[in-house]
Image (cartoon, rainbow over all chains, first blue to last red; front, side):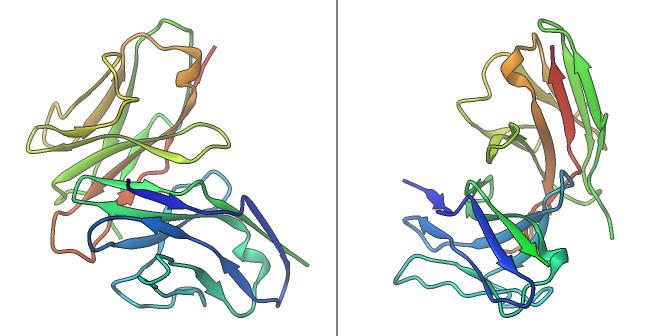
Length: 108
Length: 115
Protein backbone atom coordinates (compact mmCIF):
# COMPACT_ATOMS: atom_id res chain seq x y z
CA UNK A 1 0.00 0.00 0.00
CA UNK A 2 1.15 3.52 -0.71
CA UNK A 3 1.49 5.47 2.46
CA UNK A 4 3.29 8.40 4.00
CA UNK A 5 3.84 8.46 7.72
CA UNK A 6 4.79 11.46 9.80
CA UNK A 7 4.96 10.16 13.34
CA UNK A 8 5.07 13.51 15.12
CA UNK A 9 2.01 15.75 15.19
CA UNK A 10 3.86 18.51 16.99
CA UNK A 11 7.52 19.32 17.32
CA UNK A 12 8.66 22.18 19.52
CA UNK A 13 12.22 23.41 19.43
CA UNK A 14 14.02 26.48 20.61
CA UNK A 15 15.33 29.05 18.18
CA UNK A 16 18.79 28.07 17.03
CA UNK A 17 18.29 24.39 17.80
CA UNK A 18 18.48 21.71 15.11
CA UNK A 19 15.26 20.43 13.61
CA UNK A 20 14.40 17.05 12.15
CA UNK A 21 10.92 16.31 10.89
CA UNK A 22 10.46 12.63 10.22
CA UNK A 23 8.83 11.11 7.17
CA UNK A 24 8.63 7.46 6.20
CA UNK A 25 6.98 6.11 3.10
CA UNK A 26 5.70 2.92 1.63
CA UNK A 27 5.74 2.65 -2.14
CA UNK A 28 6.39 -0.24 -4.47
CA UNK A 29 7.97 1.72 -7.30
CA UNK A 30 10.66 4.37 -7.47
CA UNK A 31 9.40 7.11 -5.19
CA UNK A 32 9.25 10.82 -5.78
CA UNK A 33 9.04 12.64 -2.51
CA UNK A 34 8.34 16.22 -1.58
CA UNK A 35 8.06 18.43 1.44
CA UNK A 36 5.33 21.05 1.51
CA UNK A 37 4.95 23.84 4.06
CA UNK A 38 1.74 25.54 5.07
CA UNK A 39 1.89 28.78 7.03
CA UNK A 40 -1.18 29.59 9.10
CA UNK A 41 -4.00 28.51 6.74
CA UNK A 42 -2.23 29.67 3.61
CA UNK A 43 -1.69 27.59 0.52
CA UNK A 44 0.54 24.58 0.51
CA UNK A 45 3.93 25.64 -0.79
CA UNK A 46 6.55 23.36 -2.17
CA UNK A 47 9.60 23.40 0.07
CA UNK A 48 11.74 20.60 -1.31
CA UNK A 49 11.70 17.74 -3.80
CA UNK A 50 14.16 14.93 -3.45
CA UNK A 51 15.08 14.89 -7.12
CA UNK A 52 16.44 18.40 -6.97
CA UNK A 53 18.60 17.82 -3.91
CA UNK A 54 18.28 21.50 -3.15
CA UNK A 55 18.32 23.45 0.06
CA UNK A 56 15.52 25.90 0.61
CA UNK A 57 15.44 28.26 3.58
CA UNK A 58 18.19 26.18 5.11
CA UNK A 59 16.16 22.95 4.97
CA UNK A 60 17.49 19.78 3.40
CA UNK A 61 16.09 16.29 2.99
CA UNK A 62 17.77 13.13 1.81
CA UNK A 63 15.94 10.16 0.43
CA UNK A 64 17.06 6.99 2.18
CA UNK A 65 15.63 4.09 0.22
CA UNK A 66 17.00 1.53 2.65
CA UNK A 67 15.09 3.07 5.53
CA UNK A 68 12.28 4.35 3.27
CA UNK A 69 12.67 7.75 4.84
CA UNK A 70 12.80 11.35 3.70
CA UNK A 71 13.42 13.32 6.86
CA UNK A 72 13.52 17.10 6.73
CA UNK A 73 16.37 18.79 8.55
CA UNK A 74 17.59 22.22 9.41
CA UNK A 75 20.64 22.89 11.57
CA UNK A 76 19.39 26.08 13.22
CA UNK A 77 15.66 26.71 13.57
CA UNK A 78 14.24 30.20 13.19
CA UNK A 79 10.97 31.54 14.51
CA UNK A 80 9.64 32.07 11.01
CA UNK A 81 9.98 28.34 10.39
CA UNK A 82 6.93 27.75 12.56
CA UNK A 83 4.36 26.13 10.28
CA UNK A 84 2.78 22.83 9.28
CA UNK A 85 5.05 20.60 7.27
CA UNK A 86 3.71 17.85 5.03
CA UNK A 87 5.66 15.08 3.44
CA UNK A 88 4.15 13.90 0.16
CA UNK A 89 4.66 11.01 -2.20
CA UNK A 90 3.78 11.29 -5.85
CA UNK A 91 1.75 8.33 -7.01
CA UNK A 92 2.01 8.28 -10.78
CA UNK A 93 0.99 11.49 -12.50
CA UNK A 94 -2.35 11.73 -10.96
CA UNK A 95 -2.12 12.20 -7.26
CA UNK A 96 -0.02 13.00 -4.31
CA UNK A 97 -0.33 11.16 -1.05
CA UNK A 98 0.23 13.36 1.95
CA UNK A 99 1.29 12.50 5.44
CA UNK A 100 -0.72 13.77 8.36
CA UNK A 101 1.65 16.67 8.84
CA UNK A 102 3.88 17.88 11.63
CA UNK A 103 3.38 21.23 13.28
CA UNK A 104 6.71 22.84 13.98
CA UNK A 105 6.79 25.45 16.71
CA UNK A 106 10.00 27.37 17.13
CA UNK A 107 10.19 28.97 20.52
CA UNK A 108 12.03 32.21 21.16
CA UNK B 1 5.52 33.52 -10.69
CA UNK B 2 2.23 32.13 -12.03
CA UNK B 3 -0.25 30.98 -9.41
CA UNK B 4 -3.33 28.86 -9.10
CA UNK B 5 -6.19 31.09 -8.02
CA UNK B 6 -9.36 30.03 -6.26
CA UNK B 7 -12.68 31.65 -5.51
CA UNK B 8 -14.35 32.13 -3.16
CA UNK B 9 -11.84 32.21 -0.36
CA UNK B 10 -14.58 31.45 2.13
CA UNK B 11 -18.16 30.33 1.70
CA UNK B 12 -20.82 29.53 4.23
CA UNK B 13 -23.71 27.46 2.98
CA UNK B 14 -26.70 25.70 4.41
CA UNK B 15 -26.81 21.93 4.49
CA UNK B 16 -28.41 20.58 1.35
CA UNK B 17 -27.43 23.52 -0.82
CA UNK B 18 -25.30 23.24 -3.91
CA UNK B 19 -21.85 24.80 -3.89
CA UNK B 20 -19.48 25.52 -6.76
CA UNK B 21 -15.84 26.19 -6.01
CA UNK B 22 -13.84 27.78 -8.79
CA UNK B 23 -10.25 27.51 -9.74
CA UNK B 24 -8.06 29.01 -12.42
CA UNK B 25 -5.07 26.70 -12.90
CA UNK B 26 -1.74 27.86 -14.20
CA UNK B 27 -2.24 28.54 -17.88
CA UNK B 28 -0.02 25.96 -19.56
CA UNK B 29 -0.77 23.18 -17.11
CA UNK B 30 -2.53 20.04 -18.25
CA UNK B 31 -3.45 18.19 -15.07
CA UNK B 32 -5.85 19.53 -12.51
CA UNK B 33 -6.68 18.35 -9.03
CA UNK B 34 -8.91 18.95 -6.08
CA UNK B 35 -7.75 18.15 -2.56
CA UNK B 36 -9.58 18.55 0.70
CA UNK B 37 -8.35 19.32 4.22
CA UNK B 38 -10.78 18.99 7.07
CA UNK B 39 -9.75 21.22 9.95
CA UNK B 40 -6.91 19.64 11.86
CA UNK B 41 -6.60 16.70 9.51
CA UNK B 42 -4.37 15.82 6.61
CA UNK B 43 -4.67 16.88 3.02
CA UNK B 44 -6.70 14.30 1.11
CA UNK B 45 -6.85 13.68 -2.61
CA UNK B 46 -10.29 14.02 -4.17
CA UNK B 47 -9.94 13.92 -7.92
CA UNK B 48 -7.62 14.46 -10.83
CA UNK B 49 -8.62 15.70 -14.27
CA UNK B 50 -6.80 15.46 -17.57
CA UNK B 51 -7.83 15.84 -21.18
CA UNK B 52 -11.33 16.88 -20.17
CA UNK B 53 -12.09 13.85 -18.10
CA UNK B 54 -11.54 12.47 -14.63
CA UNK B 55 -8.31 10.51 -14.43
CA UNK B 56 -8.69 9.22 -10.91
CA UNK B 57 -10.94 9.84 -7.95
CA UNK B 58 -10.88 8.85 -4.33
CA UNK B 59 -13.56 7.19 -2.25
CA UNK B 60 -14.47 10.61 -0.89
CA UNK B 61 -15.43 11.78 -4.37
CA UNK B 62 -18.89 10.25 -4.49
CA UNK B 63 -21.89 11.14 -6.60
CA UNK B 64 -22.37 14.37 -4.69
CA UNK B 65 -19.22 15.72 -6.29
CA UNK B 66 -18.52 16.67 -9.85
CA UNK B 67 -15.81 18.55 -11.68
CA UNK B 68 -15.89 20.49 -14.86
CA UNK B 69 -13.69 22.56 -17.08
CA UNK B 70 -16.36 24.73 -18.65
CA UNK B 71 -13.98 26.89 -20.66
CA UNK B 72 -10.27 27.10 -21.35
CA UNK B 73 -9.36 28.52 -18.00
CA UNK B 74 -11.69 27.55 -15.17
CA UNK B 75 -11.82 24.27 -13.30
CA UNK B 76 -14.76 23.85 -10.95
CA UNK B 77 -15.75 21.54 -8.15
CA UNK B 78 -19.47 21.18 -7.53
CA UNK B 79 -20.95 19.69 -4.42
CA UNK B 80 -24.55 18.97 -5.22
CA UNK B 81 -26.12 18.71 -1.79
CA UNK B 82 -23.75 19.73 0.93
CA UNK B 83 -23.46 17.89 4.23
CA UNK B 84 -22.00 19.10 7.49
CA UNK B 85 -19.00 16.84 6.99
CA UNK B 86 -18.16 18.62 3.72
CA UNK B 87 -16.91 21.55 5.78
CA UNK B 88 -13.25 21.77 4.89
CA UNK B 89 -10.62 23.71 3.02
CA UNK B 90 -10.66 22.73 -0.64
CA UNK B 91 -7.44 23.14 -2.54
CA UNK B 92 -7.20 23.22 -6.27
CA UNK B 93 -3.88 22.27 -7.83
CA UNK B 94 -2.40 22.02 -11.28
CA UNK B 95 0.57 20.32 -12.85
CA UNK B 96 2.35 20.96 -16.10
CA UNK B 97 2.66 17.32 -17.12
CA UNK B 98 6.30 17.71 -18.00
CA UNK B 99 9.04 15.36 -16.95
CA UNK B 100 9.44 14.15 -13.42
CA UNK B 101 11.00 16.56 -11.00
CA UNK B 102 8.21 19.02 -11.49
CA UNK B 103 5.47 19.25 -8.98
CA UNK B 104 1.93 20.39 -8.57
CA UNK B 105 1.08 23.90 -7.51
CA UNK B 106 -1.68 24.61 -5.06
CA UNK B 107 -4.12 27.46 -4.82
CA UNK B 108 -4.77 29.27 -1.57
CA UNK B 109 -7.83 27.21 -0.90
CA UNK B 110 -11.53 27.76 -0.52
CA UNK B 111 -12.80 27.38 3.00
CA UNK B 112 -16.28 25.86 2.94
CA UNK B 113 -18.44 25.93 6.04
CA UNK B 114 -21.69 23.97 5.95
CA UNK B 115 -24.17 24.92 8.64
